[in-house]
Length: 457
Image 1 (cartoon, rainbow, N blue to C red):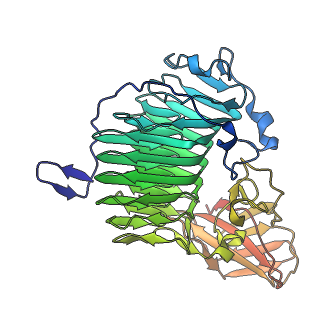
Image 2: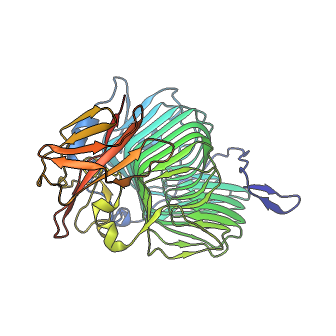
Image 3: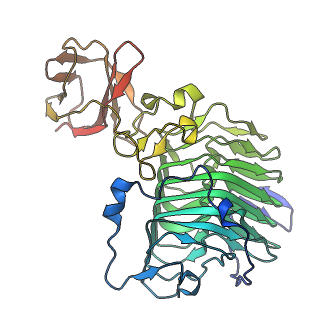
């Protein structure tokens, strides 16, 4: 949205982010570390099975420890920074505003008791206050915010996120396998607030994958873009995949845009895929509110995304993005069409209200699935081979999506079952397809296959 301050009007469009950078100063003594890690924190940043694969860093990497993290030089161009152990902070964190490295690799470690106190004219708050103009990859790190929270405030623009306050003008920014737990807040004239990232602006390519945020996100301003994961996003090509937020979002600003996952999305080429939000959204004066996305001004492609149907949402209008699922549906993997519950998603007793979690962060028992062993294609047909329980196909259903701008899996009935699997007929030569198989044993037990891709020549 563009704000014409001289005329006092609000117009739907892009937000201008022409702001000056200010140095953040002062460190004060924090309180007890015992409250720094939320109960919902994962067992480790990476599940044990993955940690061994993420322990190798390049020769010459700058290793970060509890002893040196406060004195690290973040301005070394192209440097590879890596956590060498879990970090336990005792002082207020000074956000990194001048990061010049190519990579920040958490190596499966976490940063604990990270807090940034509200100060006058602190525009950017997070582990990284801002990332500007560099090609950067951030991966495999968890941020457990201390009970004081992460806060930003200024007289004009402010940005806050547990991981990044704002990323601007990055040519290529990748964020993978990261999480944030805790409270994030902003108070200013224009505010951009998210559990993971406050704002992503004018990045040529931005990819966020396998990330989540939990806690509370709050904003107090003349205008707010606020979301459980990301407050505001814009750019040429943006992809958000396999992410979720359980954050509660709260703002009484008028106007505002507020969403369970993303507050405001203006990217012209944006895809949000395999994501969900379950937190409440309290934004009574928001012109754009949604359980998943508050304002989808760039017509982002929403693929296989969901929101909790019992979210408490207040606002003046409601965006319907994301299929609503009841709590009883959230705990059944087959309701998440196209999701990979073999390698990416899973469930764990007593964690996240029983809703899907990312296997990256938790040790999860393998999900029983249908194993498609081979695929054979022919003239307008395909065979998916798998160990079938009944050659007549009783209990089996095939779902197919023709690959396109938006994938919509639909039950496909032009099939025959045999002792090797399923024969799919009536397809179009030259087309690309995605498919999966579901089996219901009649006793309420449902198993699904992974999604497979095939092309008919």
